Image (cartoon, rainbow, N blue to C red; front, side):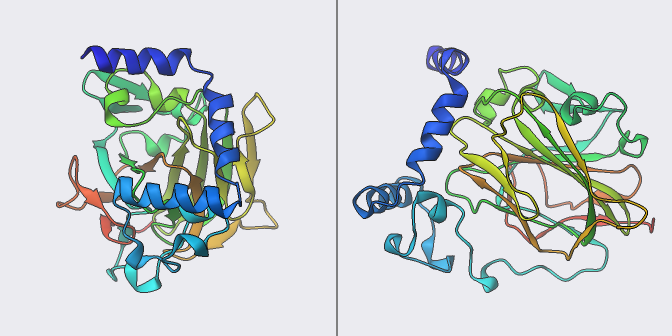
Length: 289
């Protein structure tokens, strides 16, 4: 218990942003002596399965970030074909899964937070009230690219500055409003079954969050919330097929999925602490838009 308290105090006192940015700088070092040793140590320390990576040797990567955001062989993460399927956008572990109570989500036992705070929006889309949500934690060993859970069009992206607490389950159980306090990037899409939100949450030592359409979004030089809209009367938004590679973390973090009310049901096998692979069925939609 005392070790946990010391770790939490250390996170609060540490220069979170400078420390994370320094880690990001180290992760871009191209010296073979440095990057090969770091990559080999990381693979051994966290048990990373390199047999499914497109490039299996540390020497094949330009720097640690190149390794950390590695792409997998196509056959390693097939999309499971199923009508109306919503698939996992990432590899990871389900930290929370369920239904919002109006606009309230569970962070951990005894800790709740609101959709309004998470999205930095005083009036969230009412279609998400009493909707579904799941929080998926990406451990260091996991694949760190984010893919489209189902086909859709990007309509909005929001950058929210914040702190950089660790996002593991121990911290989630002790830091109130963790996901609504950390730096994050919010992406909203329009699908055949209604709106869908993916929240990419930053964390301690996360070098950055990057998307396919905007490049590096976090960290940002802005200290205020920034919002970009991609859907207009003349432009319907940026379209992505199911399974498309849309973003990545440079060092790990968490993805929160928000779905509208009365549109989908979580797959029975997807429960608290379940391990997910990108592409496996996470939910099924029940009615058309």
